[in-house]
Image (tube, rainbow, N blue to C red; front, side, top):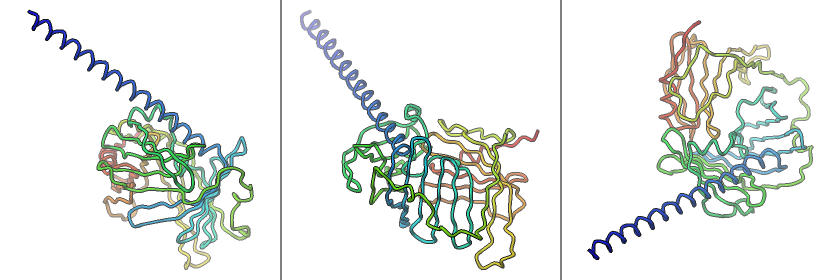
Length: 338
């Protein structure tokens, strides 16, 4: 009897210890989730409200591209200049939601509204609490990037329809210094990181275009309008991806640089539906299927693309998500005419 009672006490004690351990683990995990959400909020806010200027490198396989970004927040408006430093020169000047792209080789300026808010270092477009539904958060190691002490934050996807991310934030300001996109094997698909950075006062003249003499340049104002594409539906959008925009635009196919001066650029109407989970975006582009094109898919770093003909339309599905997610979307697009 004593042996039975002793064994019973042992079972109760062991169960209590295990329950307390599980509770402690859950509490610790919950605290870490809250702590990382604070970091993610700082990453989101600092990219919008700090003044900074720096050079960053984007790496995708063997492809490396260097850019320079200058950002000013004057308490009300965001002003930003993004310069592509490799290959053909490009400049993007942003005033809040309006973006002007300078293309010097054809003496052209394209002006349009930005569609998504995902330009490094401002890559977080959702409330971190919403991201927690589809990502596990945890703190990683500390380190040093571009001369700044930083804290790593890891976002692990809860399914195979989105990538994982590892973000390094400046310990002092929370500004994102480096970001890696990780596949299901935890391999780096692409990464982007500052190599030089200044945070603080920025001379406002630094967000002006480097091409002061643009007299005679062609200014192309993108004809873009919000619309209702209710006839088009995606039946099987990955969990967590919400429709954020529907629009139509006239896309100008600029004549090549060696074309005659009187060659008029051609235009075509393209509709776009944008979905986002707050980190990644998926776009469905819809246009007339009269052009001769070849169906297929391709991958560029984290970006997967599928092009297909559907009835009288040509569909292009693009997103920084795994190929399985793009395939799932492209196979579930339906159109019902009114």
